[in-house]
View (cartoon, rainbow, N blue to C red):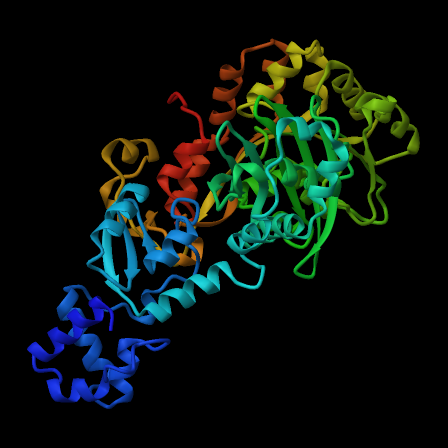
Length: 569
């Protein structure tokens, strides 16, 4: 028997759990413990039950035995704690919060390993005792076998020599490397895991001494298990081959598309590659057609904002703008609007860069600046196509803005996006582009600013009490608190310990009335327009976010994260 098993059996005899004579019968000197655990030998010989054995181990190690519910359902800290380290030291991370990491170990007295975990996780460590077989089975389930785990795939590539800088000029060599079975499986694994985690983007980022992979989930980037630096060129080349990009060109940015069938779903990937000092940084935007629900009722609109926005999109002419930073859901909102008003009686044409999702019954145009098909050129042509509704992916310049205004003046409903921080700023932005104030006042009928907040996970949310400053800003007093549903999140295995699942919109809806038209004609600054709109009932982004907090949809820190500081007017 191993020394460690000797210590346990000696303890069992010392405490009278088993008799020494029985132990000698169960462990004859000519039958070593090979392929069978100490627990199995003791239980199979009828010396004690599983319950008694585990109870004795709890006393020996001084820690509780992990139940089946204690084992994780999703991997925890995979990029912080190497898989090989977990297998060799026979432990699995089980729970993670801000202060503590719970690990299940076969040897809770392995203080060297515990210290190493504490250093890597930067948290306190809580230890549970677990059967070695259960721990290894959990690791096997998460990271797979038979070529499905990153560790196994990398093992298959071990014999492949590292690509040297001079080899990167050899296109044939790069192509051969990227076409190897293990490299293909590795890229497929990274993509599959991203889809399983509901990621919107995959980031391949080169650095001096490592090659990092990150997933953006619910708008926030997360580190995941990454391949070694030496596979960087092979992986990037593989992605570029899939996107039909030039693998020999590493000095200029490139864009491409991939269409794959993953887990029975057709998924489009928009690929962007840019050169950095340590190699090409590549990002894959995941466009999962099956996951997008183009239902305006499910965007998170408050009831009054929904009524106002719907009344605008049903008008026969005018300009409706949706504003916000990149990734705030502007295009999805416009797609939902088009789906709502799409009918056989209306002709709808879109001009986009790129066309993210194909909409049935709607004519969609992809701009191609390389051949001269710009937003402005496309718009000049489509106004002769007799459309009722025109969607412009983005107003980027004065020329596009001018044509949009002209289209609205000639009886078309125009929907577009603009990059501004709030709704009133869209007006001043267009004036800065050179648009005439009288044209803006007569064509713009409404502006919607929006952000996306993460929705609190329903399984790990708990009641929260905001501090006094937040109380005042949210305009609530102690008597109202009982009727509200203010929460915070802890993180659990169901939400991959993020505390959130999915996203919802917060909105600032500015409907252009006579007062706003007059202020536009007077070229008033955006804060004056904003003050007038608020007096007319407009909620700011922050105020709409507080409504979501009061309803228990999201948390206070999440609203603060996505909204800018606002002056109290």
